[in-house]
Each structure stands twice: as C-alpha cells, then as structure tokens.
Image: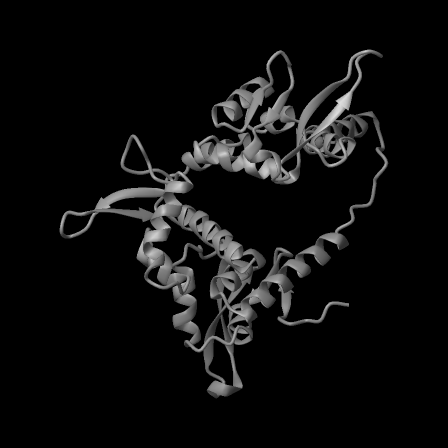
Length: 328
C-alpha cells in the first residue's frame, strides 16, 4: 500500500483535491503560506478551475478562521515541479501515483443492453472508442511487428506527410541518399553509426532480396527534432494550436525575467528563455500577438516579448527538458 505523504480528499464533485497548506508544509517552503500561494497563482492558475478558496478554524489561531485552498491534483503537481527541490520531486511523483491508483479503481461494470435501442447506442460508443484508439493501435502494432523498428511511413503519417515527402526532407538535410542504380534509401556515413536506423531484408520473389531503411526510437526522436527545427508540427500539435487560437485570452502576461524568477532560475536564464521561445516557435510572425506570446515595448521603446500562461507552460516544459539533459 502506498504511504500517504500528503492527504488527498474528494470535493463535492468527487474530484481528488489537496490542501494548499498541507502541500506548503510538506514542501518545507520558508515563505509565508499566503504570500507563497499568491505567487503560485500568478503563474497562470484560475480560481474555481484549478483551485477553490475556503476558510477553516484552527486552534493555533485561537479558533480564528484562516484561508486555505483545495487544489486539483494537476495544480498540485505543477506547483511541486515549480519548486525545483527534492521535496517537490517527491510530492509530484506521489500525486502521479495517487492518480494512477485512483484510475485503476475506476472499473465500469459491463451492462448488457436491455433492448434494441440500447444495443445500438452501445455499439456506436464502441465504434467511436475504436476509431479514437486506432492510430495508437496502428502505431504499436507496426512497432512491435518490426522488432522495435519504425517505418518512415508511420512517422510521416503523424505529420500529415507521405513517406516520399519525408524521405525528400531527410535527403535535403543530408541524412539519407540513394545509392546509384538502387531504390533503397541509406544513411550517409556520418549518421550510420549513431543507432538511428537499421535495415530489414525481404524477398518479394526467390531471386531478389531487397532491404528497407527503418528507424529506431532514437532515430524517430532525431527526425522529430529536425522537423521541429523547421517549424513542422504533428497533426496533434496543429489541432491543439487551432483549439487554443479560438480562445480569447484575457489572463496575465509574463516577461522572460518573471518566468525565470517564478522558476527560481538565475538571471542568465532570461536570455535562454528567449532562445527556447524561438526554438518552440512561440512568437507571432505576421502580427503582434498569438495565444502564446505578444510583442510589446518597454518604457524606453525597446522591443520586449511577454508570454501568456500557455506560452509560459511551454517554456517551463522546454526548461525542464534542458535541465534533465544536464542531469543525465
């Protein structure tokens, strides 16, 4: 049984929540709770969505009420990660395990349809589920059937491209080429020994043996990085951006220095944050703002970029990726 590091309870809607004061105490934050919590909220959390406020009486204050907050597990995880301490890592992992244990308990019993109408509804729901899961099924079926190797077609499909288009892109990048008189793509010598790909042989007839270039998991990540450098995004990323673009943002904005301060990073990270924003293609090109970032000017007329909570979260994820590379 998992040890209870921080008490997790249920709100009126049955959702798992955590006391802000309990989390503050576990994280061993030196700052006063109210000041600390207000600073955390400025990072982009919304009342009545990510947390709710309530009053409680405590003997320490002579029975006088004090303010506490019920945080969703998602907010508790993010706040834990922001601390960048060992206690923060421990709390975040604990909340992940709590979520996992809760989901494993949510087993919906199968109900037999009682009439023809219910049977049709049940069939329709199952078809919808199967269609939603099919891309994942296709991916893992092909991944396993190829002994850990991934086809160019499968990688390309995630970007709305054909294998021909992706091969042309990789050829233009100097990664692969075709040997004279042969149809198969092969890696250039400077990429051949990096564990990016391998070749599978097959015989369409008894006299001909062909080999096909297929990618390892490391190779797939390598291709994704190349595509990202060119601003080419997956179908999922594009869909997310379309959804976000329909949101009329009226929340807070954060400068690079404010993001660095929130994450307890030294001043040299302010410049790095700008570089990461460029790498993640967060800045608008044809106008002054988008859902991630806006162009503005300081009091001296100098150009400055400010980020929405969506942009700040993407930058935080990129920072954590960079820090994990350094740790590794």
